[in-house]
Image (cartoon, rainbow, N blue to C red):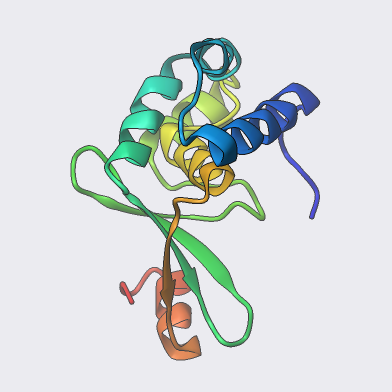
Amino acid sequence: MKSFLPAVAEQLFRDIQKIYQETTQIPDDLLIALKFVFGTCALPALDLVDQRSVTCLSSPSGRKAFQVIGASGRLYTCFLYCHYCPCPAFTYTVLRRNQGLLCKHILAIYLCQAMAVTQQESVSDQQMSAVLSGSGAP
């Protein structure tokens, strides 16, 4: 799968993964690097990780989608394979103004994956179709 992130971000996630597996903590130097690379969305993304707000939906056909419960309680269905989140911050900051790599929801997904704390939910292909079409939750 093609990565949409710069090499420095990819390396940061690998470092977080390695150290988190060993210590179940992210050290201060990596938190500072996270803030430096991702800016203002780093802290809110870490809050979403702490709240276990990220779920990976998987269907028998192999489709995957991520659902993130935002700070406001709204559910966002995000797609890493095309680097997309329907939240206003992604549309405005990432797509329109090109001022950020991603929104807090997508960053939370990357962090959860690196830390292996993503909630997992299996859904039927029919349920996944409903999620992908935006007509319903699993």
